[in-house]
Length: 149
Image (cartoon, rainbow, N blue to C red; front, side, top):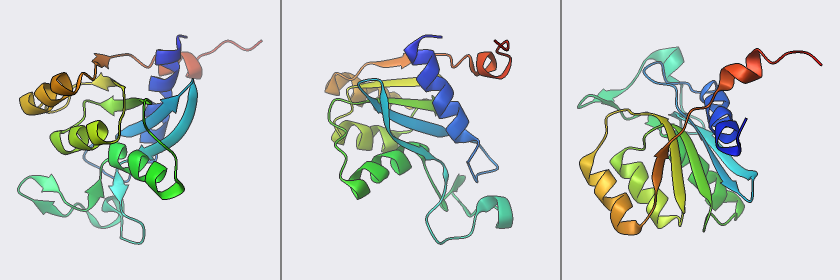
């Protein structure tokens, strides 16, 4: 398993913690082949979870959930961990708002597994910022079906 597949698999595992019944998203931020933060989409600390009470929908979006990328970036901010030059692995292509946060946080590369609601302006912003965005596959099934030694 390559490093990209490994970290993409870790983002897939993080998605298992999601409290959003609409789409489970996970994210890990990596520097020097070490995970420095992780996140999944769900409610903010102290709020009820969508899985318990349903989504709070406004204009077709759940406003209760915070995105996995935001959770991972905010974890770094909360604990004083620099994201400058780090890589971000996420299960789904980042939305426009997450794209802006990723750029401002100094992330150097973005890896995603699945396309979800691609935003042309987000792609343009990544290009302007010189941040490569690459699709990778987790191969998480290798972790599940790994032969016993």
